[in-house]
Length: 406
Image 1 (cartoon, rainbow, N blue to C red):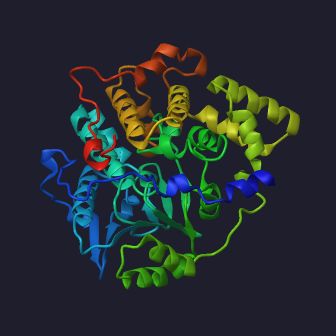
Image 2 (cartoon, rainbow, N blue to C red):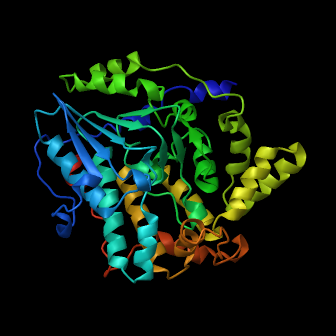
């Protein structure tokens, strides 16, 4: 119970990174070919008295992110940040999802067609927007109503305010499709209480809105029915004052606690099992715990780990562990390397195979390569973290412009 009380405290590190900025700057974080916006309807804009709202608008695809969406968000947010008439910015999704993550089905099609450059451009554009949001000068309000997974968390959690509802479902299920939690996931997951981040990253388990509040991923909770009141209230604000926005959000907030079935009541067991250095040791600890306690939760966690790509488990674990000691830009640069190694297929085809099995053919029977943890060598894992090389540029983030003390 003492531990639960601890995690109910707000996670200030996730609310704001506290970077210092130059007031005037003009830069482009986008590839040149994305300057023409052919699909503006995928990201709509609402203008308000002193604010702007970006609306993710692919409801039939659960607002899954495309390159053009990430590019448009980059342009919008940079222009809004430089506009002195705009005090704060909002983001929300249309339909039953905030954002289900990256459009990995399209990435799968590109990889099958040999279009790796298009895949690289997607990751570069997305990660640059995550960085812009994580270093944003103005207050930001994300309304995470509905499904919020993978890259959808990446384009919202780095912001100042994150509103969740009774419909919110959060997860980072990338290891189950032969990939790794990206778009800043190794930053925010590694800063969760204890080893909760490792648990969520490796198992892909879901959290609801109440649980996101409790562990610090979200800042405010509201029933979905109250969202129109919140938006109306925010729309009338003529301010760029963080405290004024926070007070307005608090007026419609609810004080909530995880129910007795929540995974947050198992933090002691999670820490006991997921604190180990290797994926093999974690699985062994879970097997011992399951045998001793007959815990259904342990059995379910083991099942999820066994369903995931063995290579993904090891790469993901190392990524989260390194993220603990790195800044957001360093995490994004490393995640970019890892993502490019996955799409290159030089070590394994697990990314394409995982998408095929779960989202394309939907036979849920991926043929992982290597097929088990024992055959995943240290050299395989290390290759995902090594520099890209002279012919492959690293992720170039504008840290000198956005973080002048760096």
